[in-house]
Amino acid sequence: MSDQNFDVIVIGGGPAGYHAAIRAAQLGLKTACIDAWTGADGKAALGGTCLNVGCIPSKALLDSSKQFWNLTQHFDVHGITTKDAAIDVKTMVGRKDKIVKQFTGGVAMLFKQNKIASFLGKGKLLKDRQVEITAPDGGKQVISGTNIIIATGSTPIELPFAKFDGKAIVDNAGALAFDAVPKRLGVIGAGVIGLELGSVWKRLGADVTVIEALPDFLAVADADVARTAAREFAKQGLKIELGAKLSKAEVKGNEVHLSYAGKDGEKQLVVDKLLVAVGRRAYTDGLLGDGTGVSLDERGRVVVDEHCWTGVDGVWAVGDCVRGPMLAHKGFEEGIAVAELIAGKAGHVNLDTIPWVIYTEPEIAWVGKTEAQCKADNIPYKTGSFPFAAVGRAVAMNEPAGFVKVIAHAETDRILGCHIVGANASELIAECVVAMEFKGSAEDLARIVHAHPTLSEAVHEAAMSVDKRAIHKA
Ligand code: FAD
Image (tube, rainbow, N blue to C red; front, top):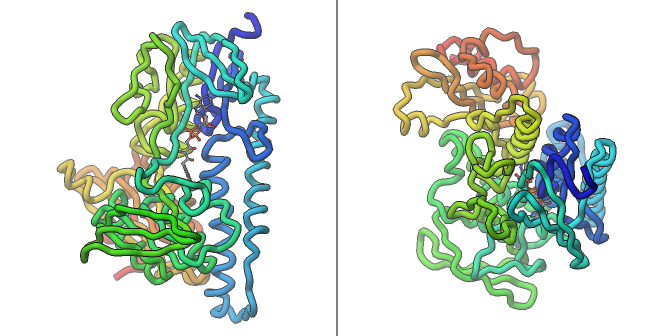
């Protein structure tokens, strides 16, 4: 096999693509990965949105801002007094940048160790599984593969009347790199990204207003969870305007002047920075040459079947650029599954048990169906819930907000969904995912021994509560 021929070529080195590449190489396949992302130094920065401007940097800033928030708002109950607490945004953002570098560098090292040929540039799929690579200096070369895995990810949706300028009107990348706390921050979109990044700057002292077009808050989550989360966010001073449609965003000097149609008519708001977080779209711009046979749907996503196969011999697609939730772990697993299928092994991703997490305070996490979905699908169900306020560990941690809710089939008791709002929901949900993946029942969860005192007791008691036998609940 020549240097230009590979068993597997992955286009895109984000979480979906780099997992696919590493697994393919582990399975003995000669693998190449093409990625276009460069860091501030102009050098390759593998890891895509997730490592560069998504999951990891947002969690770094969420953690810094949580430390500051606790210091200024919560330490007094422990008898700890703090005076003159201050945040140095440059240090905080510098720490985040260091973490990003550590992880993007880590992926490059894994590529080297697994002997993956790494190409910096933009890949374009040509017919007959040839891929043209355009390097940052414009130089072109063509490589070919027996299998191609498209993993080109997604990009923020831009509003035509609020275009990103990287300074006053920003996307997620911009909101992760402010050099000072904005006095007034406007956020368009109360989805995961808007809520997480809105929380970061709110905790550091910004006056944050979130403008959301939908009439219901967090409509994707279970209604009880959304209600509790909305109440907790309001307590923190996060202002959320629902049913509000932005119509204009004008930069005037150092301010952004917003006009939007709210519930009570036309409204104006002046902010110092505006984060537009109205969703992401699959990034497939310029990806396909003539005659590849690969189709895109009406949203620009690569069309695939349940095995991430495009229908064209040897061409697959994974991650944010295909159907399903835009989550890094969904992409990881698709990448691994496709590499295993290519190597002749079994590979599969169950889209019904993908956990969702929102890393706000309190955290929100769920897997499976909401009550509303059960009703819509005419599935008979029963529920059990348990509040963290009755869990010793949560109270000892001074984090009593929220609850766990388990939804089970009314006749078979099989778990249909688990919904958590509260401390460490992101970690607690894993147990529910495992239970669902093993087709467990609420009784299975209820009969499993949970360590005391831990937050996981809320999951245990919620499962017991499905059959009205929670111990610490009347
Ligand atoms: P991407 O990460 O977008 O990677 C695609 C890569 O392909 C990029 O490097 C891109 O440059 C490259 N590329 C594109 N086109 C080409 C081409 N033609 N040639 C070569 N290279 C190309 N998800 C979670 O699960 N948990 C979280 O906590 C979380 N937090 C997030 C926070 C924020 C602020 C954002 C924006 C997203 C977050 N996400 C989170 C979503 C997560 O980042 C994405 O789901 C994930 O990155 C998708 O992985 P991917 O590999 O499909 O695509």
